Length: 274
Ligand code: 2YJ
Image (cartoon, rainbow, N blue to C red; front, side):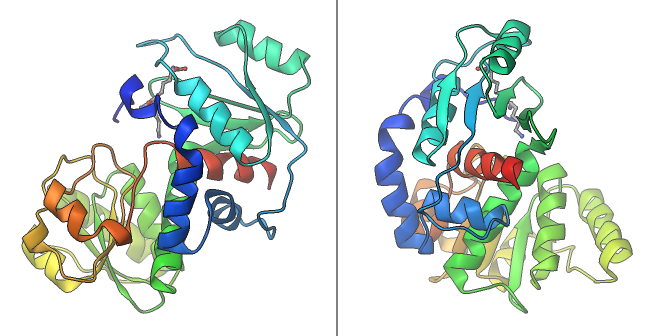
């Protein structure tokens, strides 16, 4: 599991307006619209959530990441929540969040990033929310995934969650993982759960040549090159670092959705309301 670093999150708050413009040009939706839709809330950008979000910095494990809590608070405020970072961290921060009447609390250690609705007790995991957000982005970019070939790269926990969601959206799935055993495990899971076969056993080059819609759930660094991609390739890539090298990113820049925190966090917050 990749741990974010301060440099990846320090500019998020200042760039949310530009982020929205770019996301809208690619998907037709703002971060708020995309996240509402991914969370299953039938509301539009005019929706004004009433809950206050308390972001609790967590010092456990490798400690606080500079600007992490501030970036989450800025994303929540951008979505229309009242949001703040608690003055205290850890247990004291959680107590502070309750005492101040926050409706939602959001926090992360080195293993879990979670949003909790303090009123309904609903608990939302970042991985699930991220998958929902990026699948929605792929759907919006491509006009829907029904009967379309989608290449899923990476069959770890995020890849597994993505596979289930993509199948439910009607996609024809091809899975690629460095470890064949993981591809087989995923295929068995999908067969058992949805009585559906998925294509596996291809090498990366072959896999990239059969699908022009890609969900990159891997955490491999720049292993996909521009020459391996078709002209009209659509990519949703929540993994960090990004699997596409610089030239590949340039080739797909208007059809690539990738960020460190925004989509996952936005979907978590709205899912916690659902
Ligand atoms: O409060 C803080 O500043 C830190 N405790 C934040 C830690 C953030 N955690 C991570 O980046 C981990 N990789 C967990 C992310 C889980 C994503 N599914």
